[in-house]
Image (cartoon, rainbow, N blue to C red; front, top):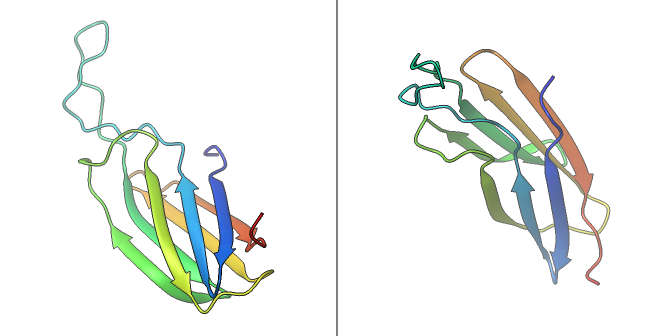
Length: 106
């Protein structure tokens, strides 16, 4: 199972400022290991972000994204306590979903 994502969603007036750190190796298939063998491709292909069950982002990625990718977005119409859910699927079929509630500004 993949490592949990680090997600923060903070309300700014009526917009949630969402920051996501996905822990994933994101191998391009071009790097070689210590023995000279090519490390096979392993990267996130699809990222879906939902706000209270409604899709607000559906992204298609490739191996060109860096290791442990960071994603930031803003969701209009959010309120404190609303649920932000993030799901990614990689090219090997692994999948991870994590959820956070929108927090009040500090």
